Length: 130
Image (cartoon, rainbow, N blue to C red; front, side, top):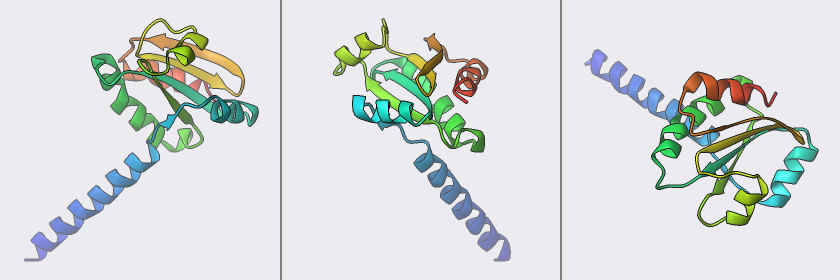
């Protein structure tokens, strides 16, 4: 009986931690005003040019969520740009494809990648925002 209770508590705690991590790992829908405000504040920024139908974008998503949940990236703001409905924004970033990630430290672009699903290289890109 004690084992079942402890197991239930452990599962509940794990669920709460996973929920808290997922809540921290939210993308912000891109607006020019919010992006420029974050830039002016010198925030670490990642622009995620995303399409829900894109398998590479879907593969990048859990990697980004894991990185966002790390304490070193607590200040990171991930702006999601919808590749299909925000074509003007996609063009303004000179992005040719969905699955493009663009890193900024304030107003300075520090790197970009296209079609990358390697966790280590995405982590390096995110680290460049600090």
